[in-house]
Image 1 (cartoon, rainbow, N blue to C red):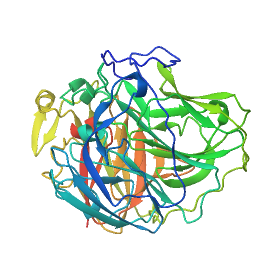
Image 2: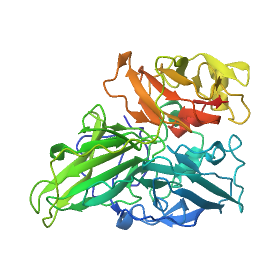
Image 3: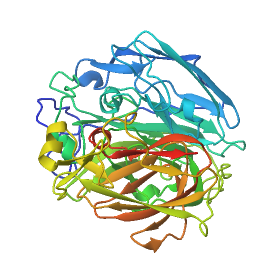
Image 4: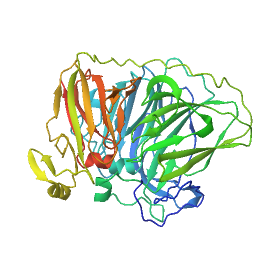
Length: 478
């Protein structure tokens, strides 16, 4: 259930399907892209104004890349080299992390761990080869909760060698914001309720940085729809009702095309999903897309697909499976096992944990703003603590994940992609390759990967308030 937010802001044109404690507004502004390359020569992080609520209120003061929210769509082809200068015009340091991309450690964007923070007025040159095709995104890893929550994020698409046969390629960047009655972002002050529950949930939901309600589609056309969840904490689970999209990729990696169902629908913070949507029906008809992540207590209409003139396309056929990315599969027979136990948070029963080698009671941890632990350890500053585990380069590993908390956690591994091989002790028929796995309360899972990228890598909850409050670790591969 989304956290209740008390603000006076109340956009008018919302159609709620069920009662909610949160005044959620939604948006859809199509971000369409061609298969051609598209990228600036630099990214500039700076304060900016954004029309998040359009005609419903004033512009919102945000932080943005190149003065847009989301930031510029970066589009390359598989095998290209990304080369970007990132300039910092904020009043605090920043970095850029390339979420989901398997990059060299020096390009990973984690302050003090993989690079020196980019101080105000300074710049940093990121350059690396794009090995994998798919849908990825970029965001800071310095003061992540605040900087991402203020609008610093963008999408990076790496096109496959063989284009997908669709009429349009569309990106929906799903986000939420906590705004006051003047449509300004509420302060990122310490909030133990957010920290100990399900993170900083907003009271305004946007798609591609705006509020609007309708997206025009053409009967007969086939869309490739790329969903990217950049919200600090909110999970999305979209129901397309009668359209029944095909899922062709998760977190940028191909899967055997299958209809979207409840097992795939939840999209946790940081996760992505590529859909093929065939638009059936006639001009003038409308289909609703419902966000039901928090149903049955709360569901709402994310947007309407409004059919205009007819089109033609190859539709209703099973989409062709995309070519696999060059990710080396793990050797499950000889893999070494490492266990991770997630504890803490409200209603979690954690009595204490270790911080920088010293055990502290839960009361002491709360005083430090740290209420989550991994294996009984609360990570304070990533660059100060030694790695939790040291892994052998070239060895396969299975991480056994156990969520012993009352809250969900999307766990993200830097520098690698992994296979989710089981949930709650049951092997999965199809072992999806991902970079972020969403664990429900009291759920367990196993993920497997080949440790083939040397360096010190973060492994953390992508609910950014949980990460800040201790639910993070570092693994070193040597």
